[in-house]
Image (cartoon, rainbow, N blue to C red; front, side, top):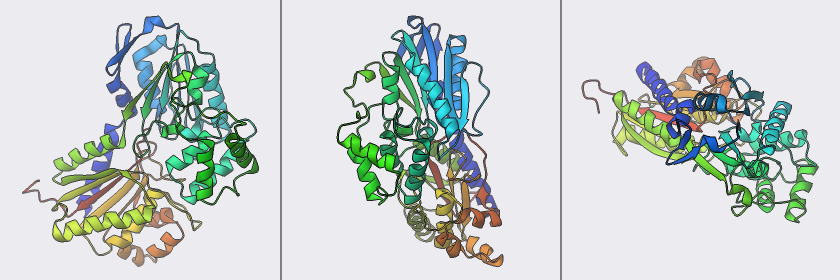
Length: 448
């Protein structure tokens, strides 16, 4: 069991390494003299008077460092907003650290700076926009009539009610002066190249960081529908309700759609995804002697319910060899949600692991780990947690009731007491969550 626990950490780290943001940028962006090669296309740097680098997200500091390495003193100015503790020292690009997942005044100030840079860009300027997960909370510019406190309250309610990232960002885009394509509109008529690291299921560009430089297919009416479906339309701040209602009535301009002129000189490149991390993790599992099986990179749903399903698959594999025989490594990626009913501390990965402890109880041939690739799970210092068939028994020995902790959404303190938290510190990448199950120890004499 100890060896399987060591292996599961190694597999997780292999997935992280595959989506290192600086390497992701350098795989898609290359420089050949005065030509900037962007996958199959290119731009001549000599055609531009200025090069401006802006962006937001948990992974944008190493992304910006890679762009500085490529473009050096050709960069005229720049500003990025990152989560507190995720910054780096850069030579030509300003770094603003701010609060996440609830936005704060530091995010407002950083966003104000990058909006000024974008707004001053002209037709002969190149704007390189770096986008990664977390950008929705970090790139914060409330629409007219909405205060930061209104955005904070609305964000907290969306997080607590279990809204998924698509729903959350539908609302955010319609309360913002930067999201939902509005940053592209601000930068017009400049040429805009967006380099994007995905943290959303399906890698929808309009959802990642609320799509600041791509067309937005959602509407004010969709935003109201999200709030009503979670029964919080009447509890979000009055200015938020009034703004959405005014938008529905046509008194506020909609977010830019696909035919808007601001997108004529925009291109977007997806540089990193959860599936890339899963493929690298699977290959490392194979090298360790496990048969890897990637189930999905589109995992969604209530974390504790998702855990039950995945545990059932692992137990079935242990007992019958279906869908594949042990030694087996099951891999999933995605972004489950948690509907808060208690007042404990934790995140979706820790809650999933806590639910898994109950489903795996007594099955000592299985170890699972659920971890956020950004190194932070919810409002905690943990990336996630690890669980196995002995967890419930070990918890009982020190007076802990797993069901009670799950009822109170207090997964953090449960796993902290067992020393089963996954602590990575800031990874400076972000491609959703990775869930790993190892089923039975590999046979070193007969590797698969």
